[in-house]
Amino acid sequence: MSQPKPASEPEAREVTHLSMEDGHFIGQHGRVALLRGVNLGGSSKLPFGYGHTDDQDMSTLQRWGLTFLRFIVTWEAIEHAGLGQIDHEYLQYIRAVVDKAAESNMQVYIDPHQDVWSRWTGGDGAPMWTLECIGLEPRNFEATKAALCLETCGLPLERLTTSRHYLLSFH
Image 1 (tube, one colour):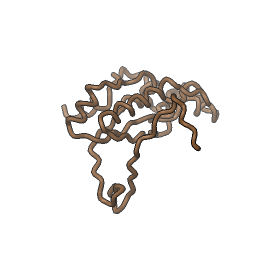
Image 2 (cartoon, helix red, strand yellow; image 1 turned 180 degrees about the vertical axis):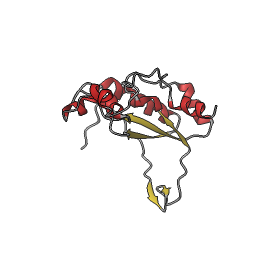
Image 3 (spheres, one colour; image 1 turned 45 degrees about the vertical axis):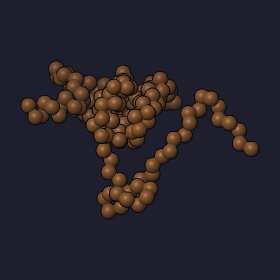
Image 4 (cartoon, one colour; image 1 turned 90 degrees about the vertical axis):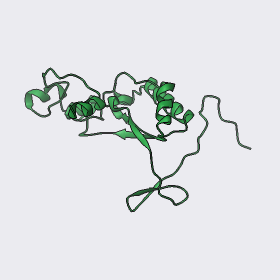
């Protein structure tokens, strides 16, 4: 006889499995699956501070006919303080976003995102301590020209969300 799940463990949801065939996503019934969605969390490439899980936002996305979210999550956001030091508050935030999406009948792909290793090397993803673990000193990257980064370049750059960058490119 199986034991009941502890109250703190979330209930499992039905997962739609997708496969790839000839460059198309194929759903569980063998048909091409069209994913209508958006990227969520462009600002999450910077690890601190969370977005929000507003009911109105999910409702708006649903009204637009969207059914799928690509949710960007970086390693730095989860383990920024050091090896094994998990930010459980951030994990709770991720869970809240996934739950809000499910309430709106939206599927979520959690994208474990990384570009060019770390924001300290000109990209995003891995925490600074990973560079320090291999003997690099990110604080010296500007002087050595090892990487040009927003955090260290010394230029008066305004922090913009990705969507705002796109809008400015059309201006």
